[in-house]
Image 1 (tube, rainbow, N blue to C red):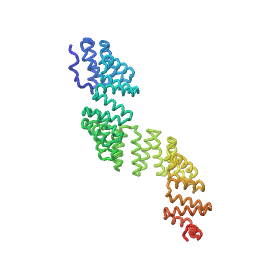
Image 2 (cartoon, rainbow, N blue to C red):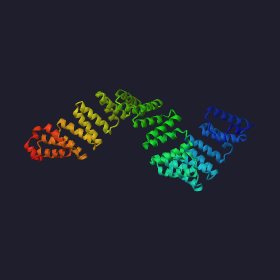
Image 3 (cartoon, helix red, strand yellow):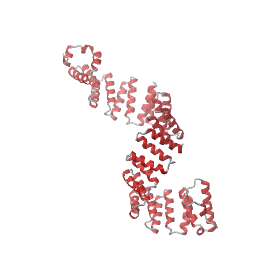
Image 4 (cartoon, helix red, strand yellow):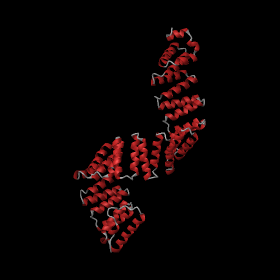
Length: 472
């Protein structure tokens, strides 16, 4: 009886048709039953590789165990079993199998490289490095070992070392396609964007129908601020893989940056349709509607975002701003409070809440919220100034004076704060201090003189004041 050799393409083990693969496995099992293992060894060897390539691990173990039962001292079969164990996550057992293979065939580079992968999976990074480096001692130009070291360093985010090894790969084997892809990623993170683009372009020369390659190329072009070209890359990715949600999302971002808001919305809607749990797409749609002044749709999509992810504080905060703009103050306050609950260290949420409380006439609550915001961002001028103005309005002169002082600390050329201090000093009958602050305010911004004349006509016309100010 003939074996299965004629049914396989020796260079192609991947089956897109699951039924065909199942038929081949059944055929091989039947062949073993009919003529025994010794009559179809080559067929079993091939079907083991087929099972590994097509993730039919249970069947792979069945066949490789048959081979090892008959040939327990065959290093190749232990290598295949180790690969299967590694594939299902039994890393300790896979290393045992690889070591058994090496005891029968010491120094075999393929086995050592596979063992390094299992060592890395176990977190034995230094062991993995030593394994791969030991291959290079014997075979200095072994591309698989260099590629393994490159990707290992890449996963450790040591991109410079990763590039060192990946460059060696393509120098020795210019058609090692995967190395160009990984080089693109490493250069992007160094960052060396022109080299990243060059690497992805080289990869795409070999793999022009790879959607991920075009997508990553688009990301690099965005970072280089070449938005139109980035959009072209995302469109090529989508032409290859229409349901590529991330490509729709990134294309939407690029279009939004170009001010093509309607087109951007359509992209984000496509992304959301493909991934109904993508709160970021919904958020971006809302953000654009808000920018366009369509508060109703903005609120609708921000609400969709928080429905998908009830911990999404940015969406609560943004929806709060929309409610505020729409005059729905209590709903806005509720959203600001929710944002604060989710992110206690977010100054923007406290600041938004404080401004709203001020608008509602809740000055004491506003002051408390401004202070919370300042505790997070102590050098934020706008928060200090609004706090100072609120304290002034409430009649808390000394605290207001201190807040104006903080504004001047942050911005020594802050004329309004000098003027605020001057007004408080007048109230406290500190005439000389008031005049000194006015001099500073007038010097920085002469237009404040007009404001002062309107607010204090009786002081402005006073001869004593003019003398103190040096105008007489």
